[in-house]
Image (cartoon, rainbow, N blue to C red; front, side, top):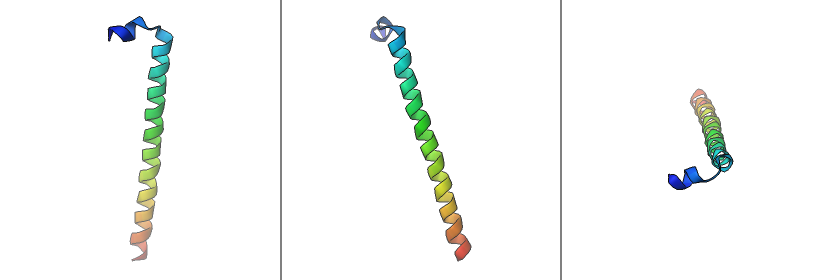
Length: 48
């Protein structure tokens, strides 16, 4: 923790922003995937 505080605040903010960005992309991807799975399942169950 002390090592993180000794670095300049810009680089730590940048790394936090990058981590948050990747998390956001992951959640968007997960959301799209669940919508696709839902539509595929609906199409399968409508046919039968």
